[in-house]
Image (tube, rainbow, N blue to C red; front, side, top):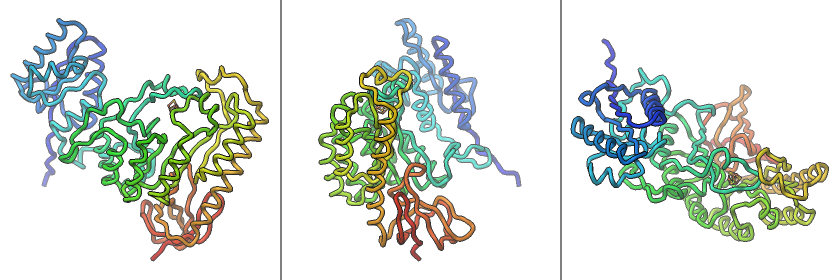
Length: 443
Ligand code: SF4
């Protein structure tokens, strides 16, 4: 018997305005085609019509409004995008029935609106690209990007000049992607961005419907939702702003892994000032103490730069003393290197290379000792471990909740031949060294 393939929904497009808008239309249609949508050359055959508007001159606006009116009269199911999207109230006042209004270059939003208005029927026979998209990581963990760009201007960093200010993805698009990844086998979501704690500040007043409820674009709300989708959710690139306190209870509840990756970069106030770092480091130790009271197992990972221009021996010693207090679980250190285009390159007080080397060796020695002591304290405990690989002689390699892939330590298991990649199991920890743990699966 022949297999009947489900019919793809059809999208009609009316593209107005300049060549830039035309390129945007092509980009939107390319994405929709790769998602499996068909195109309709007329209003009658379309399940939904996109009107890509121009708002450059008053006459262009009027033409755009007329085109929206025509699409509504001829088809009725209309999504508006393009430059006039900035004037959503004007459009909605005249055409209350439009399904969605998105602005220029908001490709993800407009594609998301088409998916909402005319969902694709699932079809494993025609979708060659898995629902989760193409991944470069193993099946059981995936990076999930929640925003692009950054509003800070740290003096050693050129990301804002390359990528621009923070632009957050809409929460429902992130959650939809998370759900697809989990359906395709992801057990651990690694939330990334340039500044995860700033997520949503640009779109705070635009909550989105998700599973019958509203999700506010805020790190805590997003983390709570993600925690209901994936077994493990790990937050990277978080700054210790006061509102980060709100995600710690989610860790205590088991919704989000008790792990925060916070790139402190330094602790000495004048170095931080020269770096133009966003957070107030004076309150950080207090904040760490508070977090550990709520989630005692919380792992704090961080990175530091040594030999930043103007860093004196006193500044560096301040950092080492601060690390003694902070007792961070995982630390990566870098020797300062001038990056072309960074304003820090013009600062006075360049630190000689041999001094940088010596400071690097001292910070690594200090942090390795802290890490070793923390791992020793885990011997005898039962920890949850996710399996990354099983070898042929019955051993396996995994990671505890305290270990992000690639950057932190590992857990080496014996008698683990029955396990598979992506399994999450309880492990009795039998031994430890500076960075890794050794154990045996329970049961
Ligand atoms: S270091 Fe991070 S916070 Fe600072 S400007 Fe670069 S991306 Fe933004």
